[in-house]
Length: 228
Ligand code: NI
Ligand code: MN
Image 1 (tube, helix red, strand yellow):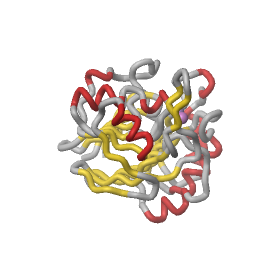
Image 2 (cartoon, helix red, strand yellow; image 1 turned 90 degrees about the horizontal axis):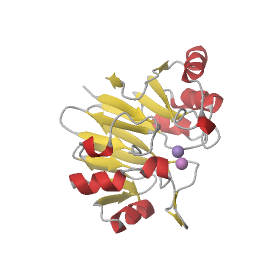
Image 3 (cartoon, helix red, strand yellow; image 1 turned 120 degrees about the vertical axis):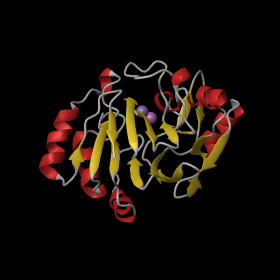
């Protein structure tokens, strides 16, 4: 059995009883966070891009647990400079890790660590994660793009995890179009509740998915799980 636990905003864990990973571990400062960075126990950390609401606590967790950060090359080098173990990858590439297979997909967005200066960290990405016979697509922060149809065709998806918050990413109607193209068994909306500017009603998304696609929509509140 594979379990996805939603930890709020764009952060979730995925585990199969033997291994576990965390994706985009923004917990400190995340008003939706369902756990704390120092309680996380995982074998690897996947980070889609350098924005603070995704990179989050990745370096601190990586250092504490001595586990790698898997990220696009430029972002991985940034994390390595902060003292983390890393496994750099890039878009279109996949790699077999002990916990499963990860492929990086394109995302239409930016990627930078924004402090007093802006340090660009290459291209943002999404992930296709194969773990315990299940295939999950996490789109990352992205606008809609037509090649989602190709991703769905090449990788029959058990789950697609899509942003619906609008403003910085797809909103509800584009995420419904994405669901049509990806054709997953289950779609989970994320990235819609942590900040006022991205507030959306996930149940509106759920209604439209039901009416317009063949996917099942599962709305997870932070801390809730989907077992497959
Ligand atoms: Ni972002
Ligand atoms: Mn974001």
